[in-house]
Length: 180
Length: 223
Image 1 (cartoon, each protein chain N blue to C red):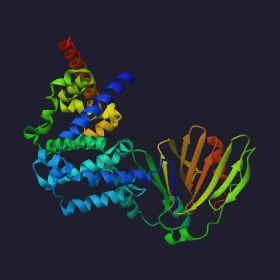
Image 2: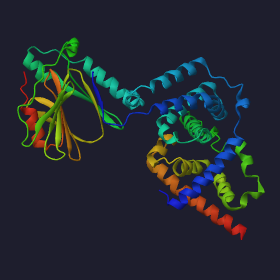
Image 3: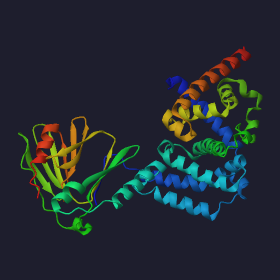
Image 4: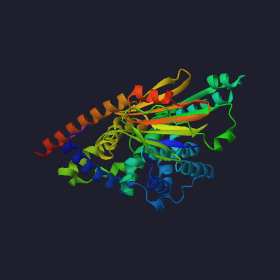
């Protein structure tokens, strides 16, 4: 049987990277998922979901180093875990805020200067807005791709991005006023 | 979405954020006690192996898998017809599976013996060649015709059961010689026609008008 492909063929290095990502971060994904989902079997389902999203977005990650991929993994795992909780109708029990270990990130008093201020404002953003900014501005995903990763509709993704930019701008202006 | 300056600033800020985030996340040594079940490891091994195959993008979502299953079910429930002529007319068909990035067309004759597809092809060259074109190359895969300047087209004939996967381009279903179902694709100046006469899949592909490509197709001396 002959098969013609007019679409681009997948690159072999994509497949190697996927394998590397899984073996390197599988325990981290499960750990992060378990801390939200509190159930072993759900956490393992989340590992599978996260890797599916990684595979679907591997071309965006190909040029990233493993530390950047780790940040992507964190974002996706959080999003997948919350989505699973939502489906289990456990949203009221879900801590949709950040993981506890992030609370120490903004304790440095030097963080009100220049770029550090932007970082501080980013960390202070509600996670749902930080995530959409991160996916678009840093990882270069389109609105459609973001909607796929975050399991939301495209209009919702678009609105979240607009709101995120507005919130960040407001936070930065406030930060500059405090400096003056 | 972003102005270039805004994107640069955000990208730099997120890079710093990632450094801080990764420093705060658990290290490998903190995760020693995390175990993954055999069930998950096997599931993940299968997933990683599957995505290495060329057809992974056809079945990587539930919707696509449902489309494949539907195609298989429809194939399995096809009915027998009495004569060769009615056989060709009723069962010469193509199935289309629509995926995100393209479509898979399968051309086959349900009743034909699958072993026939391995037999040598009795080539049916088209009788009509548009003015200005001439046959310049022939090989196992097909026949290449060249015209003036960069104009050219390609004719090929394949065994029963051939699959063709094409990326999302403008397409429409047409009928060749009022009896054979085909698909005509267009991408800019290039047109590509696939159709099946019950024995073979024919492909005509090139810088041809719709009228020319159909005329070439209809000049094939079908059996």
